[in-house]
Length: 352
Image 1 (cartoon, rainbow, N blue to C red):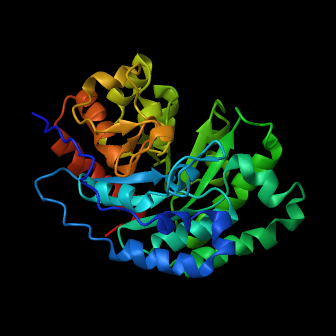
Image 2 (image 1 turned 90 degrees about the horizontal axis):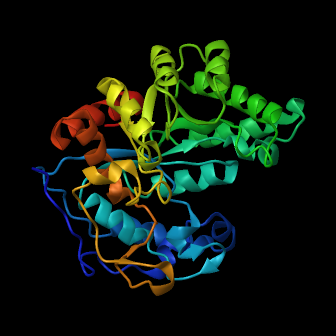
């Protein structure tokens, strides 16, 4: 049977408020001295060794730069930054390693800075499809300058940079970036992945087969993962045939039809992620019935207490919940799923 883990209010070591705040992109520019102190604080955090008996997982997609970990929700400050606590309780439970996702040039720098603070953290470097207009503009002749910035980040990242992304296509939010600009930005980043022999961290939202076709034309032979997959089994199979992995998180497990897709996916192509602080598995979601591990206490952000979990804010520690749902759907143990997905994650991203 699965072991139920409940994290008490006082389980985490108290966070120093400046630590997580320093990783906010705007804060970086204003307070470099505080940032240096924060990296030291995070690196020296008294994180204990994870018991070998617990199944371990790589969270392949964690938005650790999000303002929620700075205590900011919808542009309102609700509590002190708590990123050190968030990471500590994750590494003290079921998290082996985590990949910090970036979506802009500045986020790529910040993600690398955070990844360099702990040898269990890694990052992506790239431009999200909805940010391509903001970051690259519409004139493709000017892309090279921006791409050179990404190149320099990758080069400076050594082993901490493990993927190009988050890149791809998003047809649900074209108000932020028109499809032609998204496509051009995506193709440019495919070339970057090929140049550095790095896998892709792919975003695909409501694009039909367009992203698939771009990959067939420009990305043939490239490695990668289609993250937050919530589309059809047929599309998933086509991605798998290209040699890509499928990333599963709470948004992949909302409906019965989503779970039927996961059930049919080959285990050797599955990767797990939280996409935190988003994609939490809620009581109304089809996958919720498989969850065995509950984290308490939970407070609304407006009633935050240090060391608590915030309602509807996912964390890397919640990777165990994603695993429990996927294991339940597949009819295998969490331990077996751990072994398989650890191998998959380390094979794709060349993690130690």
